[in-house]
Length: 587
Image (cartoon, rainbow, N blue to C red; front, side, top):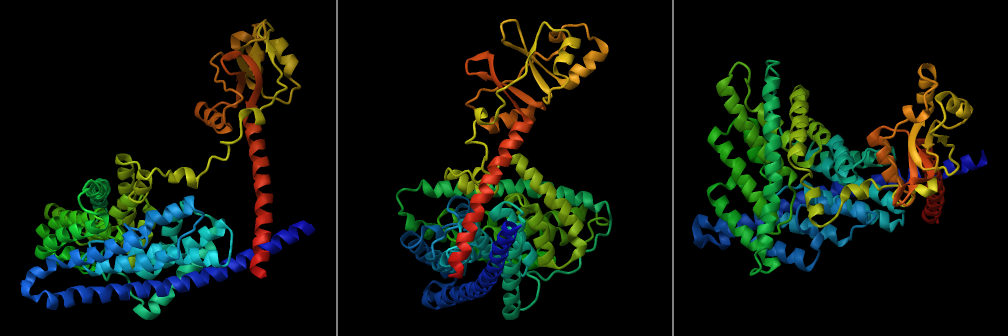
């Protein structure tokens, strides 16, 4: 009883400290998000307003060179100061959590903020969410390192920073929590949940105080006029799922194309990408930056069909060029942008064909935003909740659910990884293996199997075999021939059934000869997989290269006992580590 009280004491101390640090991370991330948005506004004014004066002799053509100038700053900053600031940020956070115990270098906060603000401010076609996720996560990681907590808790504070960044950027605290759990951590765990929620609430509250309590997008009401319209939203989900796959492939294809350009130094490639962005933006400035203003035009039905259809392709090209050439910024907002344009395009088309069903074409723009993100990130729950929070319109929730789920399923069927994990896979990192480690990979079958096995001679009758094993605690029995070699296997239930119908037959006639065996040196995970795959309760363990020589029997019960011992051992070790960490923090 005393031990339980001590353990509860340390757990309560740890929980209290986690909550306090979660609040600190949320506050830091909230102000970080505000500062980052201010930086974007500053650099936008610096590059475009200042550039129009400095490059006034070029007339309107000056905008072509603005993204290239920004690319020069971004390329140099990333290459010489912090390589982690390159790209869209979220995969780097996922890798830090999965492979580095949540450790992120403090300089990433400064480098990512400056590089992404310059990139977006100078017209780079990227979003704010990737940078603020990386900035918030770095804040959480640094706070965890300062207080010298263990890696498990550092990961929690990284998730706190992620949730706070999304919550403050999009005024979506629930969406921020789900983004952190579903995408960054890859699990919904109660041990993380409380601190993550607290951090998201604090960051969102600070954002609302300084930026106002308004949804990220102001949209008109989109009532569902006809239940048949749900079929159109399902079709939208299929289209968005296919487009999400195209988005992922195109993004990384351009990364390969720029990597193949060896004549240009890496830190100058963003300049090349910036020139391409500037050339596109000269004719269609809607592709510059985050593009929220253009999204709102689509959400209010103020863009014509030809424009929305064209902007889908141009934004895809612009974002791929920006990221592929080495720019810094998120891919979430561009996904929302393209989803809005794709949804508006299909909504207008549906309204033309079925005006009495698809009454409000702009509603498809909102649903398309969520569906493209759900497919590209493989995070339908986060997409549904976040778009609901960002629009503050409950009536759109049913179309959102249908389109987002279908889109995620379609994309998963067409492409095995999401837009974030592809980057890790290309670097040779298996995020799933790191997130869900094989607890049995270092335990062999020989360590868990039962060696004292009760076998049944094949020549015995069913009745004789039944009498021999009826008092046995086991439920499965190998059947051996006259030389003692493994010939078959039979369960107690099969013996009971045969005893009632054909008790004078030899046991070999009713036993199963279709044997699935395993060797002692194989990992326990392979055995567990075979038990599940073939829906059997036990595996004969045989000598390698000699399937007739049985050395043991492995049952589901043996695996459960091995897991219980492993869990008990890990819990004792974790408790000792937690007590040491609490003592360190208290001192």
